[in-house]
Image 1 (cartoon, one colour):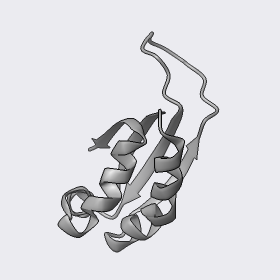
Image 2: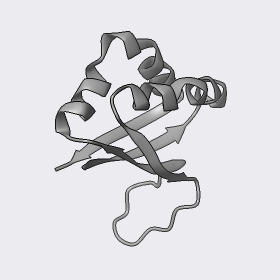
Image 3: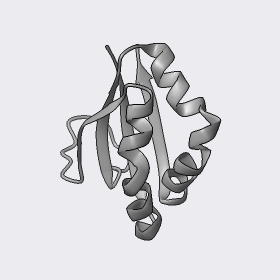
Length: 93
């Protein structure tokens, strides 16, 4: 199992709502899942601005995570996420 952190600073809630309609199926296509996500964030260290939402994704392995982010059939789904605001996704491991 491998994990990715997701930080989103939302500037377009309508795009986020559309993204949420297809995000789960897109993750599941590559064996991924959203373990948790929340707008309730508490800074433990650092001084960068907090995102609107943070989450943790899981994938069976690194190849599955790379398959999800690079899947050309999911380009429209990824574009919706990106249109919702600033997003950072970091694979851990």
